[in-house]
Length: 462
Image (cartoon, rainbow, N blue to C red; front, top):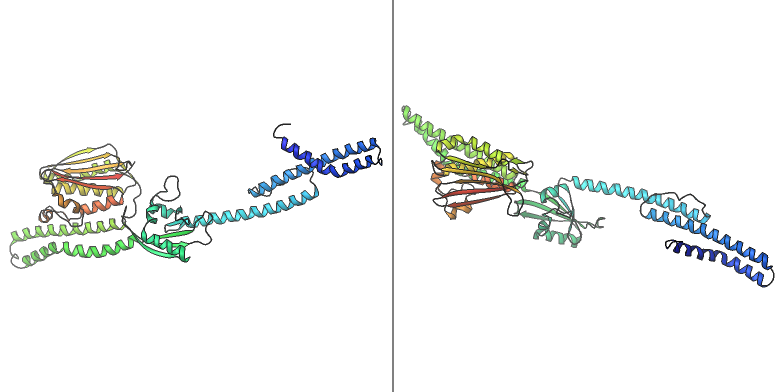
């Protein structure tokens, strides 16, 4: 007998003693009073002990199999049949009851699991971002829309990376307090300035009873960034267009009046004025195109791009397309472009627009007959993430330090007369800033008067 068999052997001996105790005592008493001869009495006693041992072994075996069946049912094992063997009537009745109970439990567990999967699928498919919070306001789950808005789940956790920052917002914290205190939903308007400006409406919904995973609060987020950006775009477009179009429009009106009057019979003046009118018309067209392009970028700035872009290939293509402007200004373009520099996630068309605007800005505002240097190479970001570094440097007059922080504002010009004469709309750098923001990148400007200006863009990539 091994050490493992010791407890079972002890239980068997105790059970045998319990079964045989009463008949053995009766036989001993009969032999003591000489009512039963010693020979037959000892034989009867041995037969009693052997019978008790057999009954005890059968009894313990039945109980062991029944206990195993109950454990399997408790662990969700389903309605399994007991192992083949002789069962005592009482054990057989209990075994049948356990089997019925196990089947009911299995059916109920299957139904609960189906409902749980259905609930999870509904939450995951909701178009609006949703977070499930514990009573301590810790994020437990997030649906697909929330992961897209707030970033991928943090390592080792089920909550998006930016969820903690969102939950620290004072307006949302107050709404969560009200929801828990009153047991009724509470709403809050949120303005998130970083990493990109977002206008959100948050609904805090208490759950009673809580979810199986401890979820006590639902936070439903409605992104109103696009709608409010459209409102701002309409107002800004009217204000900016009316201001910037006034000068070329006044010029066109003046030249038309001149052509109708004093220059009506002067072919040379007509040709000169028509050339100026064509230039002013082209300026108005570029201005409207840039305003519409900037408005479209602002409407999608809060949504990260998808796909990837080979910045090196894009830069080479844009440099080639700039050849006529470079020739007109007699500017030499020096290219230091890596064979491959992949930005991801990225919109290739918008990356091309960044390169185009920076090159155009450097050529128009740099030194005529000077040099522009275009560089593209893989480079880590400030936080160590892999990415792509793009820089455009000119050797022009440079920019005074006090103007640098405002260069990416709409229509901001260091030298208004020189900028207009160069053909700029005042929107190129604003477009660059918004595109870089959408790509979760960085834009830095370095300039020294009399030496030149360098624009550096970093985009995340692989």
